[in-house]
Image (cartoon, rainbow, N blue to C red):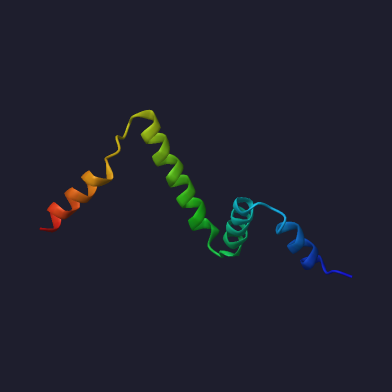
Length: 74
């Protein structure tokens, strides 16, 4: 008789790769003992996205950011 783990593993392997990857991310995240930090980052990311979408903050092109950083380091 198959164990619960073996049954679950067989079912998971039926998922498409993208679904398996997402499930793996969720499982790994659930092992993280400091979920408070993850939650805080999720809130921060949502806040920043909202600022960009509302127009309160304007993004910069990657090339411009790199150019400014290089100029600062000179």
